[in-house]
Length: 129
Image (cartoon, rainbow, N blue to C red; front, side, top):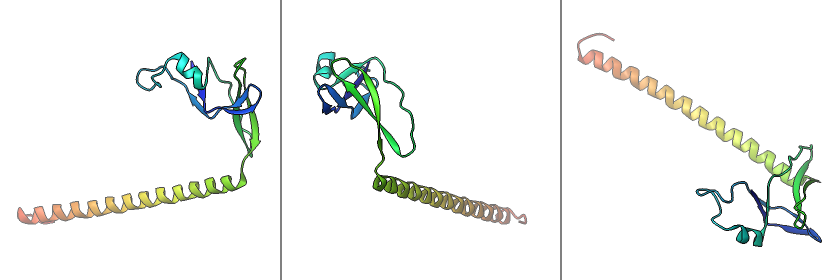
């Protein structure tokens, strides 16, 4: 069973779905509630249809709480939100590059230190480096 909740009334018995839990009765990751408790605040269904990606749109799952029919409606993305996502993605890439550069610098420092230790050890043991 799949649990749908955070339902927002669209009209009549149709709601948009704000939360999906795929394993509501799982002992470790479930919600720890009975069927009756869950159905008091949401809907239990057997499966959810697959949504399709559409450029410039996002899918919103809808459910008729009486029939448990499910479908997606596709609405335009918020351009301001898209700009924020793009900015965060670019920032994320910059941070990843900075970590990689730092990792490379650290590895180079470690290599230099290892070489210095080898040379020092060779000198201590009377050998030549």
